[in-house]
Image (cartoon, rainbow, N blue to C red; front, side):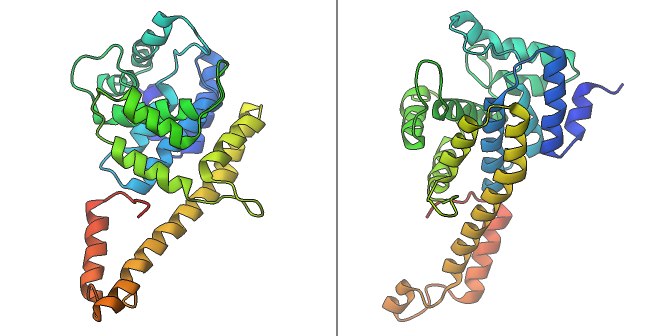
Length: 269
């Protein structure tokens, strides 16, 4: 039997998924706003450019849905602690399997005591980091560096997250990317600015999908090319000092191929 779960999981295009969720949210009155879009975009970038052995389609769908039962700006501790579990129970009624629901429930650690799905670790990172860089009623959004320090040394101090170090390196790299044409503005700051300056949800989605994503993808791909070119440059300062190539061209190409085959993450180094 065809279900909503099959329908949205079979849709591979993220923009189309977002449109589907927009109409589901209007019909079912579930939590779906600009913060969900930003956190999903962070997950998209992290997964696309770190080449992890994870199902990108599955995780991005979970990003869009894991907060479906969150109550906006709630101060009720019980509501805050239970929204992920209630969301997982709701998602099961839409036809999602137990593993998908468990992944979504793992966006926070209030209800799960058994082994965490590895995909939940990605949801946890983008949920917490994304939440900290955005304005809230009680505080302004934190700077990315500040948010990352708190994420590592406070929120996850006594918890194991498989991808936190890779995520931290990736955020450092995003912090080095300039997205401004005339005035310098870093990639994350531009994302937050779009969030703050665009009130309408549909307009915000269009700006993220049609403007921000192509720009940031191009910038990151250019940076990746620079890293490759530096590795292949036999006339680097190190090579000159050693008076011989650090690697032969053949060896260097094998290293690059090995990196890509093993799907190693991109770092800012």
